[in-house]
Length: 265
Ligand SMILES: [Zn+2]
Image (cartoon, rainbow, N blue to C red):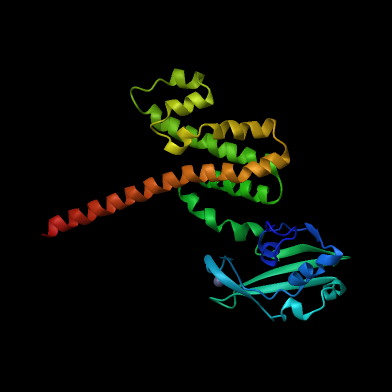
């Protein structure tokens, strides 16, 4: 929902609002419903067929909603909105709506909300195993459907995986004392692993206590409110891993290029 309005914007209704969520319009705000029914805007969204962001435009174009009287849409039982990718007009997003009294409910869409929203986290599949990447996307999917505590459980599992991954690296070192590590509490473990773990995580150890507190003490709403900050925390850790990976690849390529140069000169 946008900050200024209690109603989702037409674009939000298409891309972000979960299926079956009923939006009821008051008598004085019927025009807001009209903006959905006679959708005539262009907007930016991920296009699964292009596999990148694109601009979408309505197909079959209605006139601007202001052309219709604000209660015209109440006569429809069901309506569809189809938009197409301006890069390739055969790429379509289709949404189906149900009108009941003065409310509008989205009852179907293809591609799914998850497909439209997960593009921006796809890059993390390079630094997470398939299993944990799926759990990460599951956390995002659950949060977008209003499931707060459940989404926290998945984030916590990813967090624990990142710690364990570093632990396995640290164990290789001859100076490492695993007895101490096993007995340590989570924040002490993070200290012990400070050389292996991304700096951000070591500096923000509290992220784990918030994640584990969520499961036992926070309400659904509190978890949902804290979700974006927790997700960004994990993304920063993953960004750091991506950076390292990128740098290593560049170094290797440079070494190879220099080696082939010196053998040919
Ligand atoms: Zn496209």
